[in-house]
Image (cartoon, rainbow, N blue to C red):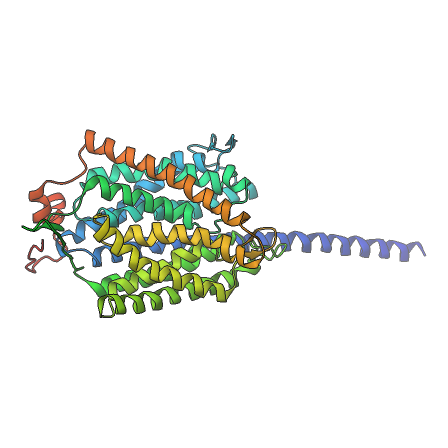
Length: 452
């Protein structure tokens, strides 16, 4: 009898130990899947740097191709360093009154633990987002900005402007606390970059020959066609590809969890809404530009694709596939009208349409949460019985970030202009920044004629 009881006790101990081991293995496997998923998402977002470089290079003139490429390479390199030193702490450090993070500067623990592992995977994912916000600016200020000045302002954006408004929304700050919803960054990333781009283009002024005043006093707006549209198309498609990491990996985890929007269960829906909005944006801008310009404009269609992506970035986790098509379609039309308005009414020279894509559609996408949002407890919009409450919160966020990013960027560019100089000389601009600033031609051996 004692022998049987002993054997039974041993069996029970083995079963219990196996259960504990299995539970620990499942938790460990879940954490590993989360790490791998966020790493894959980070790599996809990093690929977007290539997309931005190709889009901006393709939509501008050949004599500035090396300069634009250099800017899109170096804004990440400098941005990663300053985000590690300062930006992460301002964005994700311990909260101080809902306004700014105050810890974790120059951060990176050496001990190998789950807590520290979480820090590293999250830091890597966040740094590629910071780089995206900073690189938006280069397109709007292309072809006439000093390289050294570009490096100065891109560091400041990554270290200070982007992280602080990011803290308000994602880092435990006051906007997030009031219920402002921006799942993957229509405002946090794109509107911030768009406001900086607009302020930079205003302070910098238009390219030589862009706006010509005739004898009758009327101003003629001259188009400077991009030198390599296939290259721009490659960039737009790379951005589309990377955006599946940008949006879908913003779940933060691959595991199912409680089934909420920040659960692996939502990865599929986010990918679907992202895909549909981008497609609808491209179709919409194709139709609108075809009617408006009497031709199916390729560059405008590419911007429509990006407009759909920017527009769906905030609401991608809280809207249905059908709503995402409507959002993308509206964003695609908006970008055409915005490009025309900024270029011909405001007389702000934005060579690649960055302000229209990222600012106009970033604002629209943020407000779309308050219209089409349909997840109880997260965001319920006007069309689903939520009244104006969520839309009002979204509007407060839009205006607050506009004031912060717009004013700070304006001050930054004015200071750089005063202290270091912001714009190249007319001679350098006419020659092209490739030879003047880098002593390098993107297309050596080919004759490149200056196009005013």
